[in-house]
Length: 284
Image 1 (spheres, rainbow, N blue to C red):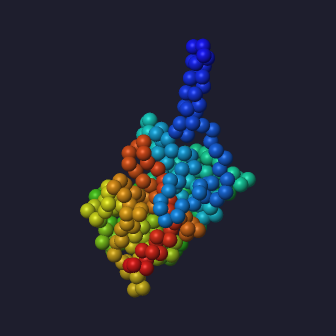
Image 2: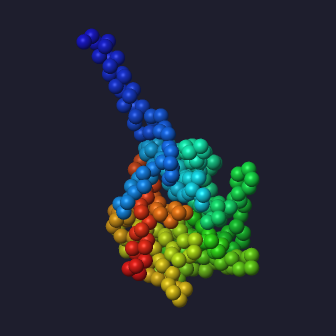
């Protein structure tokens, strides 16, 4: 074979290899529920509709209550900037687009009418989302990453300050009460609470001596007397020697989504059958 033919063949091979590396190939058509992802069983699987790439980290995803939009945050590993993105279901296909810069750790309320952004929020309007608003004076002194609401409107939120428990603020007669610490045996550093819509359980991640790695997912169940049960580690099926954080449960109650972080080039979203919650509840 002539040298020119060998070089041409090599060029085609390298171009094909490059095009199919790290998600640079043409984006697949995503159809069906859950942004076209194959549902997992009781072993966590990657949830990566945008495909994994060393150029970015997809993080903290959540579905709107109608399951027709999936919001998530993305870190550009080149400049370190974060953005908020969304997959929307249109004509049975999911289409990805940019929403804007990330503010706080976004998550919607159970009715889908409000998107919490840490100590800020946006309200749903006929044309999209409103301007960003502040939660008010009670929350200004907290360094909040994730704040979310139960169906009754109770806020649960974290505080970046070290050794701070998860806090809550109740909605009474249309006004929020002064935040109080949730009475659970929290670890050294606690973040990213997820409260069940009916407030029957609380999930968070913590760093401390009671885990498998840098950060682990924990859960506590509401007891019959209204108190909170002991903190329960999700176990080695979910937690690992690296960091697991930012868990949510899909609005249909079927799956647990969370972040797993090794480093900037090896991080992303995972999901697993939410039956593990009922398994842990039976043991609590």
